[in-house]
Length: 433
Image (tube, rainbow, N blue to C red; front, side, top):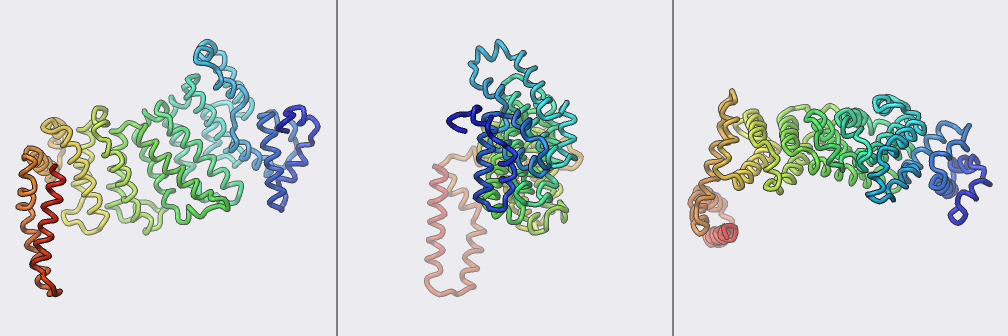
């Protein structure tokens, strides 16, 4: 096959290999699938003309195999080899040819039909729909179709619906292959800024919630005999990071803060998650917020800061006055971190965005006070910061001293207190420098 190519295929009875691919013996099955993979590389989608009459389960197995080794038709491969000049000259002609090719090959006439099949069709039809969406996404990245970018909200909405029951399908070989291919397609879409940068807030909320939910699936890493679970986890992580990078930053911040509010303060935020898993959800959201906040200086020019501060305010007014759980404490800390980093960049200009918070029907009791403290610390000369911080924490140090004395643990307690104070001073001096 590799040396003779298409000439060798003419003498092969492909249905024999399809039968062997369903064999019980794993080694025989694996080799037969390799042969069919090589045949597909040579013939592309025309291979189906030689596979009439095969069982539906065999057809589904082959569709998954072909999609995993690359479902691109020869016309897409040749398009990628074209120079930029050649692509520009014939983009219109190739675009119409690709559309005819995809609809004929996959028996799908429109994106609407495709998304219906993806949500409600049999698994064989779902695979057809995934291939269709994957190819249209490739066309968008190559600049010859705007179908997926134009209908990004509908596409992501459909993927979110499918994802809700994705792990309920079971984890036999066929379904595991489908799940892997499904996650690869959504990763491909989310990796393109031109596709997802205009994703609306409700759809962004839905897809991020589902991705984080799947990341918490019990036993995910152990799925499959060939580390499929580990591969899935990496793919889900990568997809979340691509969304954080490529979606509009204001929407990302607002969605993450809304999710943090839901999963921190609601007793049963997600019926699909066990309580033990729901308790881990805020930690994942905090990691996402930290990832964004590390680069907030670069993001701020494109962020509607007033809207983000309003989302923070609505979170804080829902937070109980006395934090009663570790998740509430973690959530409060990340909110303070965001405000701290924003104020360090914006300085006094922060007050312009803060006006939106002042217009809210519920008065602010946190943000204004935090901003003033941060601005004051930024105005303090660096050399005075350790003394100021030590003075501000004198009550904490006194409490430490009292507790240590009460414990009577032996040894030179006061010497240890002095050592602790010196370490604290040194650390603050390093931080100030």
